[in-house]
Amino acid sequence: MGSTLTPLSGVRILVVDDFDDGREVLRQILAHYGATVTTASSAREALAGLDELDVIVTDYSMPGDTGLWLLERVRERGRSLPIIVLTGYAERQAAELRKAPFARVLRKPVDPWALCEEIRGVLGLD
Image (cartoon, rainbow, N blue to C red; front, side, top):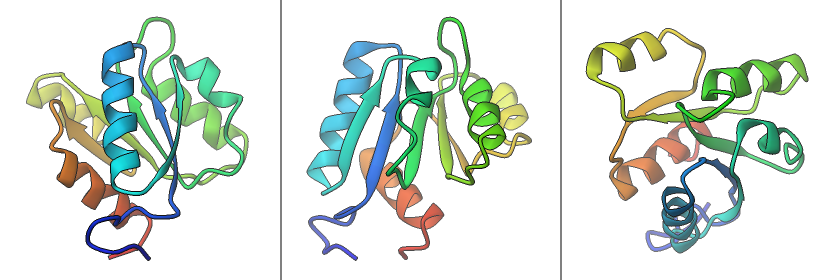
């Protein structure tokens, strides 16, 4: 699925981040790699758009509800959708997040190609 230039071709991704610039940068990067990307500025907004998705990429720390809250709500709805969480927290806190059932936990700033490879990995596209 996808060539070297568009390794995410056909993949439907929801990017969740309260930081407008961060959300837009991720949208542009993932679209550049061929993904169809929708965005949400909060975990609650993300819940409205769970249909027709392959993966969620979410910031962990957002005002109101966290990426973990989003994961729990998605699971309550019976969805096994892979969720990749991005965090700027220190390594010790990132290690704690890895105990949660996220598909992947990545530290910010995230390398665009590494994110692409992680998405392919959780979807079994390798």
